[in-house]
View 1: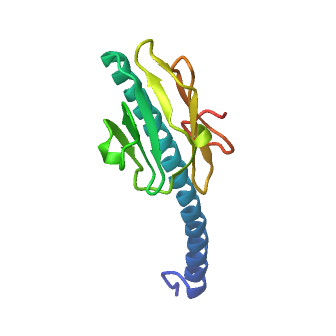
View 2: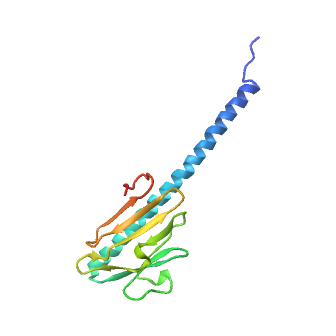
View 3: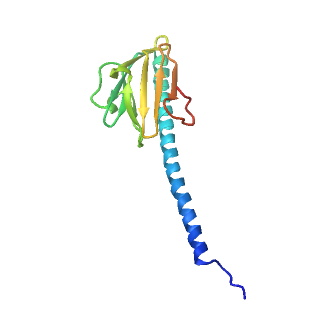
Amino acid sequence: MQDLGFSLLELLITICISAILAAIGIQHWKEQQLRNELASTTKQLAYFIYEVQVKASTKNENYIIHQFTSPWCIAITQDEKPTSCNEGVLYFIKPDNSVEISELSNNKDALILGRRNLAQTMSFQLKNKIGTSRVFVSFLGRIRFCAENSHIAGLPPC
């Protein structure tokens, strides 16, 4: 007579293998989620600066970029630093994720000129547990971004 079904040993082995694969998969999924957060925040910041540049060029106005630290955000004004991020002409508030801004070049305010689409040379450094990325703005207003010390899909290496 032949028994149908699985033995207890076969079920235990299957459950153990599944648990090992799930543990490995969850760890890689968390790392991938951190990579995606860093890439997404970097691109959002670069596109925000591009939006400021377009607005400055269209209205022929100069804008100053101010950085706030906790929670981090960036405000754009035409004159002195506002007391909070929301008081700026435009503002970029940190997305709800693990990415922190660690540096605005020389921790000073930066200038975007609308007259000839120029900008003060600046860079922003963003980081989380997975890696570091940068957003660069050149003197001629070219905005680019890159991943510094790790491979992040969607970001070219620095």
